[in-house]
Length: 163
Image (cartoon, rainbow, N blue to C red):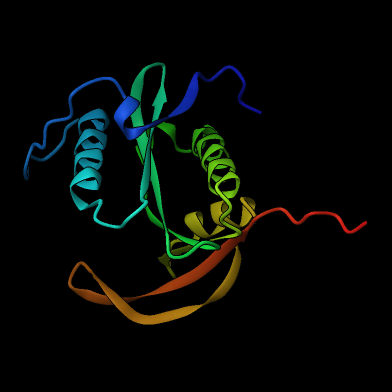
């Protein structure tokens, strides 16, 4: 795959530099945008047990993924964000696969995610990770002031073989 990319995930607290919340400043570069997103994720981490992972490439932040358990068997994604600089490179998939290993090693058997129904790239990416559709939430959120629907998908832990 993309073995030459120095991509790794890190627990939010292990990213190794201070992230200052820049407020409503427009970003001219992707690194500042990711720093802002990580800061917001930390501020919004009100769900008990939530885990947030920064994604670093060559030591620079390029995204983050987070999830929170709903119960002992089911968790939900709380944020999946990547900069355009890593679109199409495989970095997002590598990071997601690492986070999925963490999710399933914790005993969670199902990770649920939602995405805008019109976002075909995210739909394809989630399917490639093994997501299966579970339903649709009609007019669930606003995007640019208009109601949009969300698809609900789930990724299940690998099943143990029957003996």
